[in-house]
Image: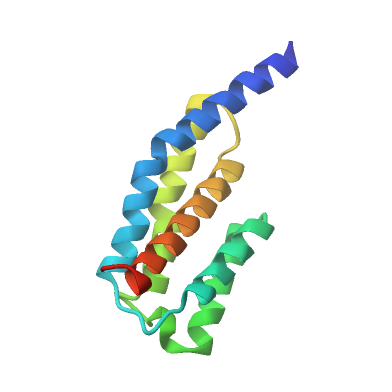
Length: 136
């Protein structure tokens, strides 16, 4: 019976993630469209995506962003920068969405939070590619 409950909870989580996807895409597109940053290359953004994909720690992901800011100005600096907006979204909008999904599915929010962050950053890599090589 508990295996069936776990499956039902997982299905609720996946449904919640799918329902949050439009918001996630909008948040990262706004971050890339409305903040300041330098000549950020797609490969540099993809490095952040790889860190998120291989880490189970939200703090490690934010640490990597801050490390990149310290290395060069391509992520922007301070208020209004892309780096700060991404961290703000991780700690704000994305975390809140994960908490709502977890509450509805009666699960821990942290795995959902990580999954939403990974999707957010993945969509960011796509949007950055569009901005750099598309018609934007």
